[in-house]
Image (cartoon, rainbow, N blue to C red; front, top):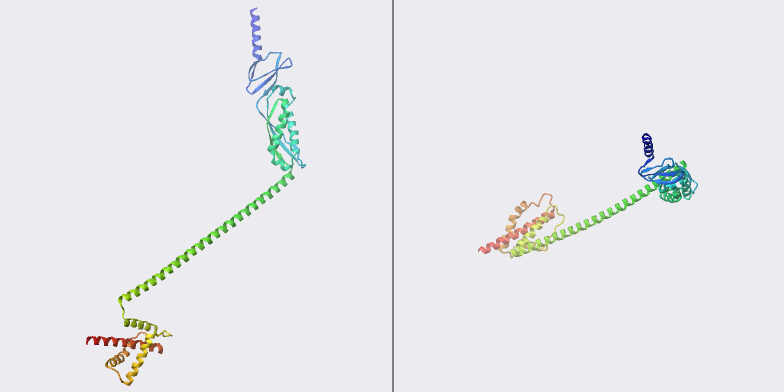
Length: 358
């Protein structure tokens, strides 16, 4: 009897251990009792009644990434191309997922293909290539609404690849090349325009700077000339003032004038300039010569002056460096006249000195 109870207890313990079920995290079990939906087990430990209960389906509650194969799609402008999509979905109702459709993933795949054809069929090729976000959003809305009865939640839809026909790819390549060439031409034209504008601005600024520099140079030159003229006139005025302060006699001034005339009457001169004072002096000398010829009315001082001139004339002619072999006749006459005037002045000075001493 004791053995019977021991065996019975062992059998009950084995059945109890066999009835224990552990549901992992992010999973759930759908349980049926006697062929009818009983409950949904979430993560944790559960006891399954033998013979009466059974696990119908083990479902993952994680978000699933469903990569479907490419589907042939015809656009609005009758271009056939291959498009494959990726659908992100998760189970939010295990009961509907189990009993709503026979094969939920296969049904979602077919529904994705038909929805993709409907959405892309309303667009042209260029719009299809540039409106992926629009296509994704439209498909997500349609698929999410259609799979609610299947216990699926479509969270995201992405167009993975769009493969147009080869001839379309060639046309698109040519179009892309033409567009890039156009952009290159536009960029080169813009760069050339900017370079021309920059060069023109540089030339303008250079000319402005050159004109400003030339203006400043002219101003400085004018100021320099004005200052030079001012200094010359100040020097001349200072010289005149000093001459006035020195009280130069008329005889000294006449002597200086004769020295200047001597420089003018050198051998290279073709013209002789004779001041009015010298002309009057020459006239006086002519009258004096007539008086020597007549020997009438001539006093002792006049004879002394004539003797002095006669004695010194040859010596002065030899000492005059301005008189050369190739000196013209007019130059010799001018030099003689100058020496005569110097002799006259010397005689006069000698006479005045003698009379003063007496």
